[in-house]
Length: 255
Image (tube, rainbow, N blue to C red):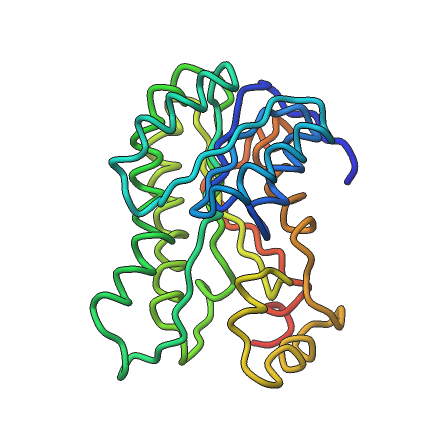
């Protein structure tokens, strides 16, 4: 991935940082000189990711085993990240959950499980990190939404709603935090070859997704990470409140 100047060189917390888009984002930011904290429910994988990223980039990287739906764990994990990385000036919320449950089969718990991880967690994380973000000029937040937050799929209503909510939250946070110099944006990936997507596909689904893309393939996590790295960098210093679609042309050619 080509280099993009990132300033300031403050630390970035990346949720879902053990695999998929989250891990790719952490690696891309580290390549640009940003220290990173990989937070993930899978603590062992998060530690492995942080160690590999630190070896490959030469910048500080740490890990925390954390359930982002449990905000009581945030203060200690933020303290640890601040201690390891020096200061915190960014958040990438890439942790996500999907339930293949249509509305007529949905129960409240499964709905809440998806909303808590995909949407509610970003609200509470930003609130917990506000002292750090406000203290570091150029701070930025990127939430990983989805093209599924713009269109709809009958089998994943909770995922659709959570990702659409993240886009609305992005606009609200950008308006509120802009006067503090904090930028807030969302990236909307298309069909990307991640463990979460590949683990949820039914028979023939990958072929149908590929058929919708003018590029004739699924996306790669590092391609999404490049967009995130741009939005976290000073190259995007006048970009806030936006949803950047990175989907290989699916939305643009299938409406």
